[in-house]
Image (tube, rainbow, N blue to C red):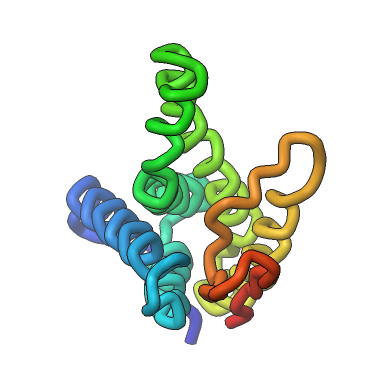
Length: 167
C-alpha cells in the first residue's frame, strides 16, 4: 500500500527533522564521494535521501529537502573552490563562490520537484531515473558544472570517466 502523504501530528517539528535528515544524507554523500576510498558506499546515503524525499508532504517540500541536502553536499564537496577563487580573483572571487553552492543545489531541488508524486512508490521509482538525467544535464551546455555528481566512483587516473549509480 503506498504511503499517504498525510500531514504528521508534529507539523513543523517533523519538517525540521526531515530537513536535518536530508542534510545528514547530503553530508554522508559528501564524505563518501570521490576522492575518498569509500566512495563505493555512495548508494547508501543516496538511498536514505531518496527515502526522505519520497516521504515529503508535497513537491515543494521534496524540493526544499533536496535543496538542503544539495547545499550541505556541495558546501563540503566544493570547499576548495572558495580558496581557489580567492587566490585567483581576490576577495570578490571568493565571495562569488558562495553563490555557487546554493545555485548548484537548486539542480537537486529541481530533480526532486520533477520526480515527486503523491505515491511514495511512484516517487521512489521516478527518483533514480530523474536523478541520473538531472546529473547528466548538469554536465551539459555553456554553464556546465560537472563537479560532484553523486554516484561517481573513485579512479586512480584522470582519464577515468564518472559512472552514475542507477538504483
